[in-house]
Image (cartoon, rainbow, N blue to C red; front, side, top):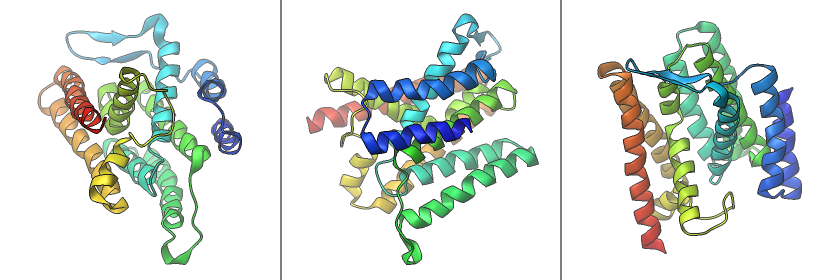
Length: 260
């Protein structure tokens, strides 16, 4: 029922084009409820042998901000046919690989099935009616996956840094594009052609290839993080996550400067 509420907020935005302030304010309501009253908050960001990144009093505000950012990063990816659907499936597939629990794997399959059916409609395959996610669908997907990740971290089923690697492309792109917009004194959260998928699409001229490249990029980043986590150590994986973001941002910034 709470997830339905976030979908309604997206539907209102689709219909009345809410400004960023109103949109974020409404999103906070269901997020606040789950974080505070259902205790779905992050208490720490992982144990790294030498130290533990505890959040203490910042647990609730940090969790709310993380969910807000991740939900809206999903919304950012809803720009080309199939993109958010394919990338979300890549995230859910990674979680399926990480979690051996059959019940949880079944839950992931239950989430993947409607996304797959949507993709058939989104691409109008077999001449079926074309459908779009809109803000309603993209916010709902981001909401479900965000709290799924929080549940896995809170129940100690997956180390927090591995969870970050699962959604690495969403995190990198969301941070990069907003830092660049701040740098260029542009309005945050606005619709624009400066997203990664538009850059790739302009170069490939193919929606299919753009979908494949971004989903593969998320998977490749995850594999790098997974290998560093298990074959080096947790701290190396954390440092690598930050280092690769810097590399990613340098390339995004270089392209931005080139285009401007």
